[in-house]
Figure 1 (spheres, rainbow, N blue to C red):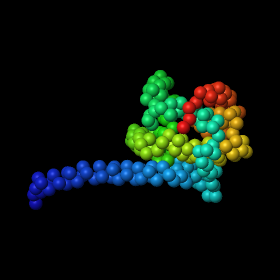
Figure 2 (figure 1 turned 135 degrees about the horizontal axis):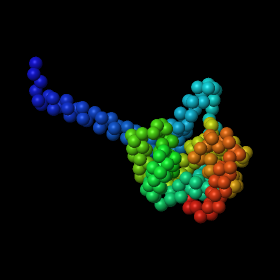
Figure 3 (figure 1 turned 120 degrees about the vertical axis):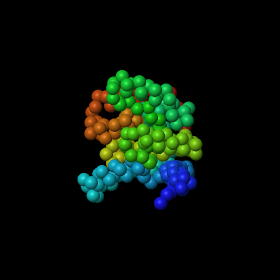
Length: 235
């Protein structure tokens, strides 16, 4: 039985449209969550769920230390320290620090391996909220799209507030409040400049520094952050 060219054409169009429709549906799902979180606090994140699952493979009763606190209840010292450590241009950029990305690419090319990243706080939040730790161009592309969504519908203060409440600070330790109490026995509002600088210095490798609190690098990096905090601009 012969198949008409028109029918073949219709099936070809369907095959082309299906992935487009699926892609748009996924983006709408992401955007709906971003919109919801402009006024509602996320109870968890994709990254937190992955860490909890890994812990429960070893201990079925494992729980995360995580307590949401409002922006005003987080020490200004910690806000400045995180800006210094993670994204000095956070106030000024629209989600992407192109100069920082180029510096990271140059450094990685020189080393012949991925030793530096150029991710902004907005990009880190996009990844933590929704994505896996997979390293691929597809994942990076999706991260960029979610970053643009965050920057479109949230102001910098809200992005920063969510980031500080969901970022990892050690094995099972998430958010500024849990980290402050875990490491220093105080609330996030009562952190000293020195304590804030040390927490910010841990962010690139929180679980490693949790296991190695006497690291010379951690001490030196904390001191560097502390020396620059007065110049940091926060939302």
